[in-house]
Length: 296
Image 1: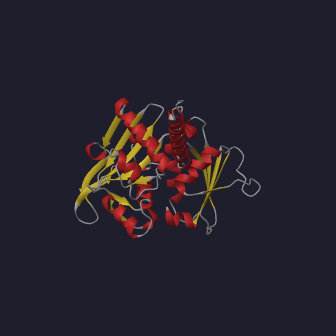
Image 2 (image 1 turned 135 degrees about the vertical axis):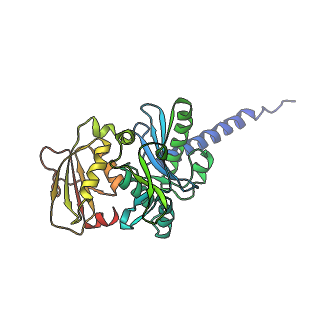
Image 3 (image 1 turned 180 degrees about the horizontal axis):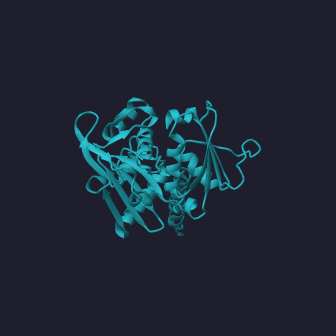
């Protein structure tokens, strides 16, 4: 009597096929949902801690280091989008109330401390599972969250720097507008802090930036220029123009530079050079109008 051949090889092939399909699906999911981090540039985001303090996290692949800048919640700030002056710890909730979520916190941090950050999370990266799968309020895509967690785990072994702004000379204690003690910035933001946000696509290429200011609001173009210079660019001209009901447009010789500026300031990228031609000698041209000033 002849025996039937064992079916194990077919079953093994089926399992290999299933596992390979699963891994391919995971790879595609991560790839398709990775929008902002390429694994080479710095990756910055702001995190709202439950105790009211704020953390700005900088992941730097070039030196394999994670830097965390902690800003006390009792720091008085000028809130983005013209919401007035508040303690920093109140900005997250205000953003939720006004239906702009963490964009208000990220914009406020950028405006007051010159830290170029537009990504935000309500969950700590030190809680990897929650940060990836149960992040709550965040604008960091799934693939970027996975990449950030893997780097943070690796960075925890290779290098991690924590800076508490309340314990240095970066802030000073005094009575705030509400009559209670708190913190205010000690003049200009220190280069010891802004150095963490230098971008090699800006600094190494010696970008010359030209800003057309059609906001009709004093100080907006200058503040934008300060933030761009923290990244490593050089603002060589600010041209005052008649106020226009426009937002923000950016034209750059380097597409990646244009994308980074557009992400940070929510600008549209001008691709048709016949409509918006950069002046000779400039690497980047940015035009801002009244609508930009309203949300800056």
